[in-house]
Image (cartoon, rainbow, N blue to C red; front, side, top):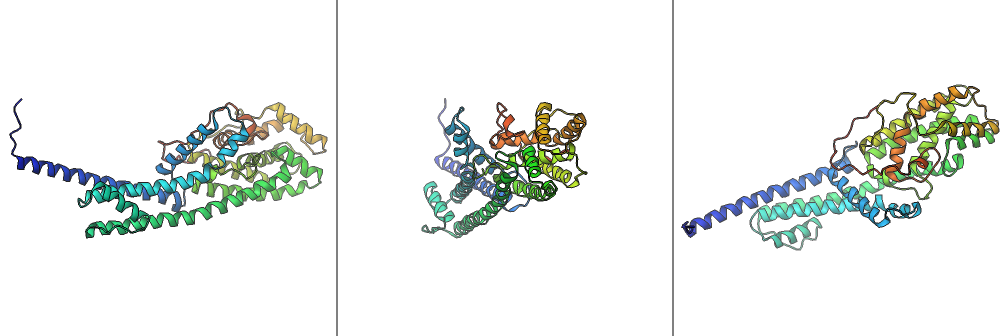
Length: 385
């Protein structure tokens, strides 16, 4: 092999040009990271529609997997509930930390790419800038401009979190007020048949209309808040036996029973509540890419059996609730309503690991736990409406 006869000055020039190219790529990569992080923050906090953000999904997925490792495969529901109670809040704080770390890493690459600082000096300058400590003097004007930009971004991210958390907890409070109040009307765990039985026992069946009106509004609010702030889906109720998923299922089952099996004048408001409910559940499921039939037929199978349906009507009949005489037609009508939300209700119950409740989370044992999709980030359009 012949020795390298390139003059030393040419070798030095080549090495210098190569280092300039490396630093240029480092600056560009850092800029991409910062811009991508800002885009994730805007989609997560500011944008008023359900658009997935890759960074947030990675964080939520990682935290969920770590918590599952802590609980173990065969943990009781009580233990899983205690551990998962911190999942939503912990993931939100971790998202903020991830944003700050990525912004800091991106600016570190840009500072080093400008060529005036070592990697260590760039890291220190980025750290004090993003935290607005300001204890390191920039060596030149371009670096100083970047430090001002980084400090501004750090303050913006903190301000976004400060404004984001009150919105989250306001929506959570509205959701949980209705879920807790449902215990008085539908028992704990809640049941649609139990709700009808209690109102009949108190001779207040005519007041069910108020329930349908209240929960139609609840479903509308649920759809808006839980797609704009998807982290809310994983915020668990203060009581272990409560869940927004099982509460939704109980109200929808109650409305479906009134619309199919109870011998009273047609209750249009109950049917409007069913539609508001299944649309809300489907749009939340669409955000997480959960599978469900796009356009189910009225005679498609449902998870509730005919025996369970007859047992519920027998109990209502014993309490002098006027039930339709034609049980076969009542079952067909009930199944025709239930099929609209049956699959999506169970998928959401699996996703949030909801507590057991009649006709909803009591039939998800053995179903595969859903993972938060990481690669399918394009929002699926609403289906079956």
